[in-house]
Length: 385
Image: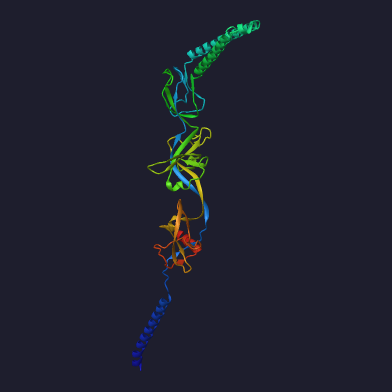
């Protein structure tokens, strides 16, 4: 009996183990069959709404002075003094004396002119008195014997002309004396000074070069793709000018004019903006120096009924949407304008199901799995943690 037990027991144990193993494998196999893998690419969708956008136009140009003056002496003479700010790089204000020419000869000429005016006035008074006497005497004579010469009319006209001539000479003498002090015609930057104390200058001699710092201009090109969005009214439109990345270098400006010419080489139009007080003399703002290369920004036309969408969602003028069965559809769109990292587009598509995260290789008609936007945000936040 014990002998049969020793033979049957191992066989039974083996049979039970083999059966259990088969059961486990069968169960695992059923689980694999029941588990279905979803291989569809995941996407998110969103709704787009049309809106109106004002196009911002950006261009670049160089700052230059509105006025450049080659300052010349209007009288001859020796330089006796000059303003301490009248040096290369100096800033001078309108009406400020820049340098002075020796005045003695011109003061003497003014005194002589004043004396000539006084003498001419005396001569005129004498002639007027004699003419009055002649007129009274002529009243006693017959008209045929009275002539203009008898009434001293020529002598009176000559005296009047002499007085006018003397007054004219007085004005010239006064002007020449005033011109001995050469003044700044406007708030100016002294670019160069070519004289010093003791130098002799003659009339018309160039003594310095001045740049007006009351107003500066920036002439900048406008590319063809921007020209369509230029406002109908250019003049007096507000703009900003920036000479660097810092907001401290940003200044207010305004568009002054269109130069009216399209460059034959580049096919670009050119506009001119003006900056008041570019060196900040009156406003105490950070200066924008002549020769600086600056960025000009201003508002162009407003485009209506467009969608604003990230550029990466539009490829070859195609925008992807989903149909009712969650399949990809490519839609032809019209790119109206590039706006930073966005496109302004128009087109006929389902604006309620625009694909915002595309598969790596999107294809027409492939089925996708839509991830709710909240789930996508949660995934991104989890990845960040």
